[in-house]
Length: 342
Image (cartoon, rainbow, N blue to C red; front, top):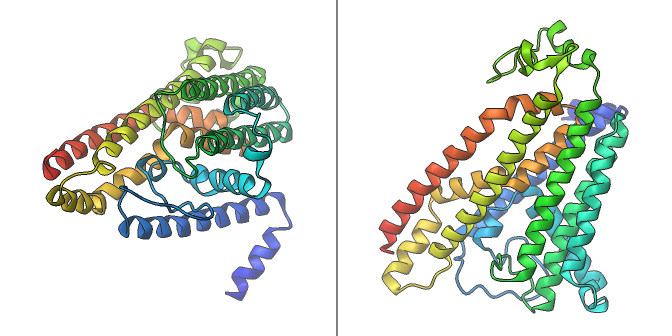
């Protein structure tokens, strides 16, 4: 134990060591919070939950919250909620509407994209931090919306509201702008960057069709053509889009099952199904397949300077994973409806 502690202290003297220790602490934090979330779910239902007092990431629960990515659920949401509770932001600045905040975080996406398009790693890392601030503002507009509607801490989508479309449009546009920043960065890379993988013997990545992730007819002067680079980014962008759309649909479908009032006999089966291991596993996997979760991974690989490797790896594998979890979810939903008698 002492040797491990000494190693951690020595690691903190280097930049890479600091990132490593920070990553371990973050994973430990998420692991502990996941255990608490699982225990909280086992002791409650998603119907008629009353909440009084300060914000808690574990109560009230909803299918949307259970399927939200860990960074959003355990870091971004709590900090935005506590910020509003402590500063009374939504009350003092009542004239600031959620839509105003949505347009603000859209502007932040443009600034972040400019930074991540830089050929300087520190500048790109700053761009990642700015995009994380954009994500925090995205959470804050939800906090302000619920405060103005007197629906504090109720995490559910309001598909029939105009604000939902503005917020969703700002999110999609912001993600597209950010992705173009990454694309412009790839455009700037010299041929030597792409050729080094061949020299180091690490050119062929899993599920890629050729060396460096492109064929000889798709490169110019030893580097991929702009068309191929655009295709790589587009594939991941489509994965984020499909994952976001199907995630939202699954949240709605599971909500219709587990947040619906039923008669006594069906309620027993409803609760039993909600607390089953299979339901937890599927909802938990969705936490990492959500479009927001994929963007969090994107920010991580940008920060680690592994964008090209990542885009090659997920180019087709990502689609397979998204299709697989949707097929499993559809089978599970059909089974649950039949079990409950809906």
